[in-house]
Length: 341
Image 1 (tube, one colour):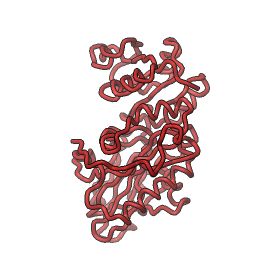
Image 2 (cartoon, rainbow, N blue to C red):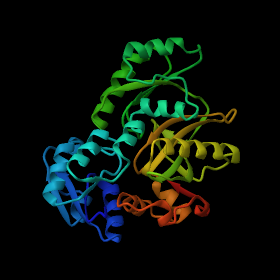
Image 3 (cartoon, rainbow, N blue to C red):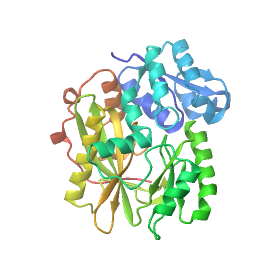
């Protein structure tokens, strides 16, 4: 199905980025915004707009109202951008029911990857290493029990099961911190993703944070190399570099193969990122999470490969295949480095 009219269910930079890519393909765009965002850049710069009830982030998280706006606008597709509803399988399923194309992975893929416990299970199934942790929604008492069973010098992360971007994530170094960290992580996850479920995972010290960009068409998957996002503050990325400097050839190959293997097992269609921790001590690695959506950092992958990933995302959502678009592994040659701050 070729997309003709696209509702962009997001705001800010990513809404403008999607609009630019869509216009280059001849796709008309519709913005959404609540009253308090009426003066925002995306509301002013995207020609047509639909008012959402409510205010602030909560307005963009109201999937039923977003779909109602899309139907009023005569859109045939919705692009969720990143954050908000981008990894929400129920929203994608509702789009399907209402005859709207969700620009992102299928409902089944979202269920396999957006939920961190399901993603960990998929990693284990596809022989990709994971850190010790829980594979389901974890209570505060179970979190305390998990920490008590780790070795004396080990620490623990409490993490949101839904969403990404470092939201709903707290490091615990002492048993006395669990209650406050758990409550804080849950509140942040509920505010950011509308889902306060949490899980826990052993903390890997002295680790690099490496993410592999992939793209798939539902049948074939290729990787678009890796990015290093190890420099962070409060679990938020400060500097991102593509490709990862000083990453051994063997580790890079292992990470890229692991990402592609997991994506193929999930029947991946669209853009996605698979994130890993790599030990600076012995080069061992572990799968951390998958982001089944476009990421803020997609721009530096575009720079080193000379691609427009949002255009490709829209083309794949319209039914194009990777080979048809020239996205074959042998053609993905890196040109220098790119840095995002």
